[in-house]
Length: 402
Image 1: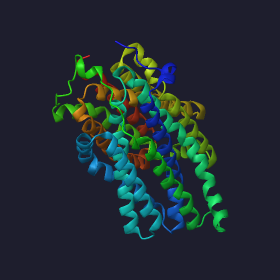
Image 2: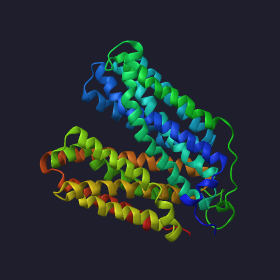
Image 3: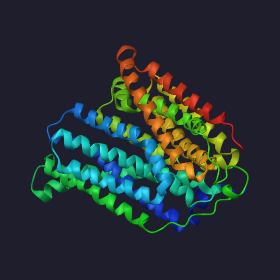
Image 4: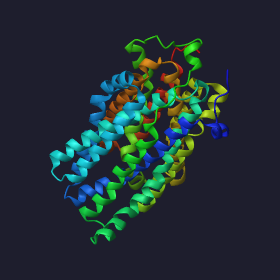
């Protein structure tokens, strides 16, 4: 068996992999700018936080409603054209958002953005699998996740100055709607540029997985088997939904941090996630995909429990470790599922994981908000640790032909 790719072998990446990584950097940069500025843009239009929450729910609902049909579309058309379709739809949806001011039109635009983002991000996993050998996927999946997260730091910094530059260009205040519209036009521009690395045809690697023991290309797994693969993602979504929508409130209310200190804490956690995505492959090289994904998720559960500390530094360390271990584990779990799913069903398998993850997140977020009001964050933190531990058990108990 060939050795699993680690960071030491990234210098030997093939040109198709570099093209996909370039796309991920550009698309990730667009996403991070959008995440930072969109709520400010809504505020400039006169909308309050409830509208921002509504539009966020619309984007998530689009993914849940269309996830499985998109998976079948990816398997029918192929991952490359569907990734392009997703990015095109993403840019079109943002054009609607930037040209509209009525809530109904904003909802339509946000639905298109949410659905298109899901299609593009879901199709990218089987596309990356198609241009890589099985033994290098764990490392390359981790690298792709890492660059997507790390570029978010650059996107946040760039997005912070874009409204001022746009306002100066237009001769208006930086918080005017026109300034935000011009600044957010960068999202559309980066989306268009992100298509360019994907336009040329990708050569498909003849995967040893298809020739050797394991899942043959002609095999089709029952839907119940694909659901079992996605169970770990559902539990991961529950853990994330319990704490991540409220992470800023946790550090403000538990430790009295001001906004800038909370922002610094979350930035440190984001850096940890970017670094963590590179750590899974070396562990996989030693103990295998299934055990490494499960071990890392168990470690995340332990890290979360540090957040129960009444002291700030251990709590920050726990939040940092949570992000680091989760970011290290999910590319390994994706690679594990891809490895044991026949190519004609990989789009469906990945989309099913996304749908269940989103469903777990949405359910947990609603419950968490109610629990916090009555009992605070202690039961939330314990529930997150349990969800991550159960997710690890769901991975380690998979019956796989290894």
